[in-house]
Image (cartoon, rainbow, N blue to C red; front, side, top):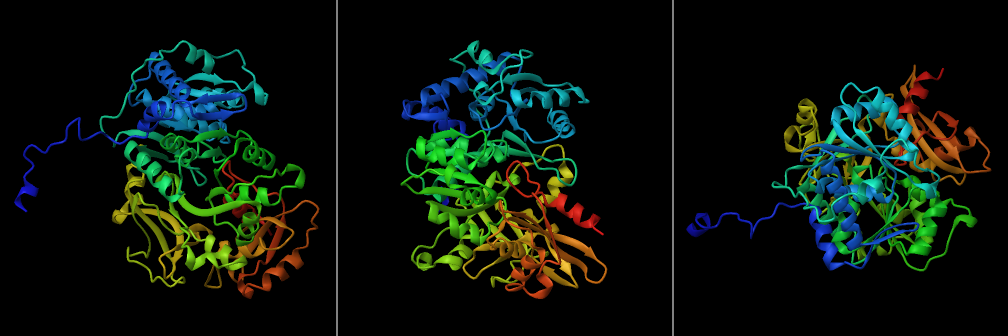
Length: 543
């Protein structure tokens, strides 16, 4: 065995070691899939050769405007081709891509511009006023704004800034991409939602994104030339890294700017969409779409859903429409999804109705690029895999962030004990499959008993009149906290709190049954998550 420890003449070299980067996928696809469709958005339809050329021009244009390796380039864009191209063009210039949530307020965007020190920002005309206002209240130097008009969507150029297409036209199509010398180099900067304070800047490296793309192809059982619809905002975990993945399999990205049932059904019917991702609210939208918004299709559409545990009732209904849903789970800090409810073939094929939906609502097991994901107790020990004992989901693997930008204390806390601490409370079943019980902050403690808001929401969502339900803790003099339900009804349904409480009582123990029901449209984030922090404020303020 001695020869295995002798490294003489066995060093890394250019022939046997290349830093992993998702940029390699598009460089390869430009040759291997040259004439295949790469990006579609209305009349914008480009092949892989054209896609690569446009990304190259973007990298060249950024370099010509003073962007150097390590600088940050931000975007304020919906799911349009410029955002897709930025995924490759920005890092191809050596810069770090900072995609910013378009639904943030001026103050938060100004903070992100300042904290990330963006040199240039690509901004859709719809969000130009937001970007300009944010620049005006920054403490540091403001980024140069490049406007990305979308006349087809009613957002014409303002004439006040250089436009994206003008910038590309004057760029060098033969620009040499700046590839990482070390796969640990920073690729992207993504800010968390910041619902409890200033958002934290999550830093991705090239290696993690590359391995995420590889693992996703395996977990989604992809074959060549899938057609992917961008429902997940491309500013959210860089669209779960799917933009970086699609060139790997010669896939087509279909951009979806406005997320509606009609747009989704239309893309499936007209463009042959085979894959899409989205929060459970998207599934709910499709299930409850009126007949006039639906389109028929004959193929099965593969769906990754994440962001919150989907209600079993929703999962049971959507499969009948032609969608095969896989529940996945992850966080901004893990590049997106890192666990999946991998279907266990013959063991589960015979399950039907609520039993089948209940299995599909699990968060499941680790993606192949992850090292270990487990439910651990406060002492970092595995909880019993009995489906009852609760602990925190802890994550180790290559698709975990480098850390929080300019925040070493938060980074150290997140990585304590050699795992990333998710903050999500879960159980593990005997087969190892994880299932979220709740976010730690969302557990309701009533008279010393823990109540899972997820469990109560799942029951309420089973009522025929309920479109969405969110349950939070309401302070109570007797019990400390009691469940308070905020419910969004389907069109035409009549609010009846007593009837809904009675419905829940048929399934839930008395202490778990909501004591208050408020009917209203629920506040949501840009990715479709219900903003429970807003609902908690309202519940605390109720007399």
